[in-house]
Length: 441
Image 1 (cartoon, one colour):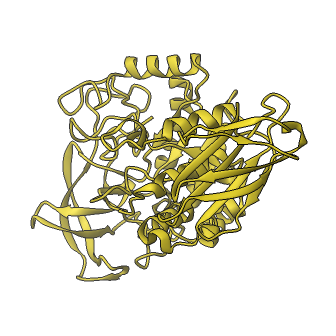
Image 2: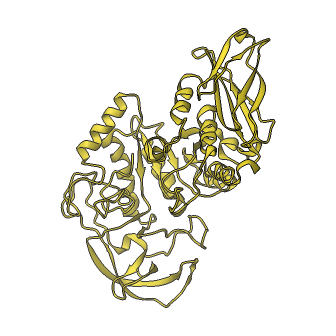
């Protein structure tokens, strides 16, 4: 689910959090804040009903937990701060002076229901707007009780504690207690089954560790699924973070996404045999949440790296039909204006045929393949071929086993013709640029 909390603006997706997951979202569309009761997505009653229906149909629901920051305060406060270099947050650009910023959150409609905490500047580390001078910059809040940026975050830009808005200080005891309480409450209140943790590079990892462990202490949530977003194109950096975090979380496989993006950009020059190299799913298959694109990678977005053309279908074949990782299909690829032709067929193939042991045929730079052997419940399995050279159709001799002797196989993605199995082997074909998913008739 998108971030379920009340946002600053009516059309806000929840990342501009008001009484939000950043302030653990106690307002799920229940109170009249910011001129409305509903969030962009609807009311709390509608949220609970949608989760109830999803669960009745065998679906778990993850809450998108935007814990890093807040926006849309109810009033300003004046306090000392120092302007920082945006390219090196450890370097000050000016001496300490008073600024006026929107940092006070009173939640007048909600009052003390669910939580009595009211947020002020003491609960934050930094802001990006001075109301006195009307200047946008990164300001580190200083003064009594403030400890500066957290050191337990990513070191990009010197220190990447600050991302946007009003940055939360996760070392503050009141903040931690309120956040932990919200994590337990939102799971029990909504019936959701786990979390997506947004922007983990910017959040104190000791807080995140305890947040996850605390949520899993709740009865029925001992195995709650949690996936963390740590955006970096380095499997070793992600593994170091996981070893530091020491919490039962999966991670988005950002390096695999960038492999797909490079394959998309290079076209026929890309060696498909290397497409999984350096990915999290290759190094830690049980911990990887694999994906092709998302809301941040689209053209014009903050992490633009859009996978286009036939590479997108190849990428989906690799994450959906292989046994490793937890694949994630981007909503816009399935329902948006630029829907991916063949994606519904791949999802169907995953459900019906992609079971059992895996055998790879990564023996050609421009045409790779693999076999799923099937299991007791789904005995037939499938043969998958992916090609990117764009000039000549491909074929591979692939062993499917003596159990399939004399059978005929067809391509779910529409190639004409059939493949006959002789001596347990079939000669399977693939378009010059495309995907073929062969299944037994």
